[in-house]
Image 1 (tube, rainbow, N blue to C red):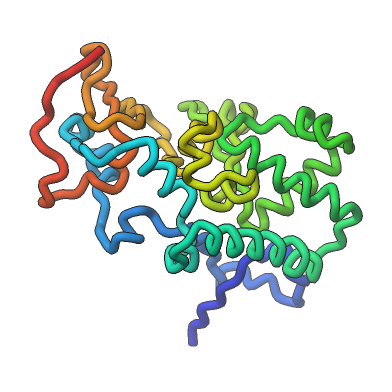
Image 2: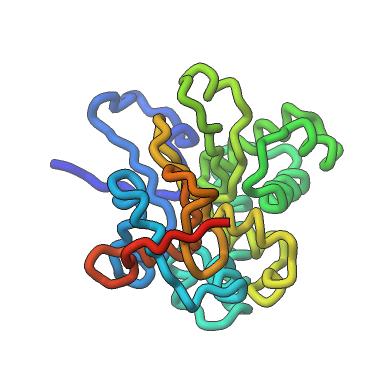
Length: 270
């Protein structure tokens, strides 16, 4: 028979058994809910991006404001957070989640020699979300060795607190040599770890990198169309370039077929 086993860590951290299960086990990463999944709607942004990217210029969203994006960033994509009505309740959930992952899950699997430094590393990664990975700078800020920081970041990857987004290039070998971006896997968790709720985000310069983490979209191996996500209401073609489109961030979940949210493109440019 078949078995579905879920957990909050990768198989690489689990105790080694006598069987590798090679060819008999498949690992699948489940990320937090997208905005469409939260609203129980099927988004078509990726479909449009790969088949009809110019149609994304028809995205219109009169409700898109800095405050509305800040609210979505602070909520993130964890299903359990969506059921908590107040910002204080969501903050408590994120705090408890981080503590349990660090102090319980990881402590049961590996020995963390400097738990205080490890917690600082988590918060430092949250403060640097959507930035190019620079372990040396991170180590300098924390006043610890680079090897220790590298090990801690790798542990955080294995428990799905952070992820690294490879640099875009057509050359596979160049992709492995370029520095990837470091992202927390959930914008709400990142916001909570740096102490920012939705009203604070509206006024904070940190909304930029947190918005990038919130709207993290992985590109294809071959360039098809350049799409810039931004926070204004209407999409448009950039500088008369047919292969470059500026699209509201909300297009990620408002671009749906047959729902009237993508109209015929109105060509505007700056």
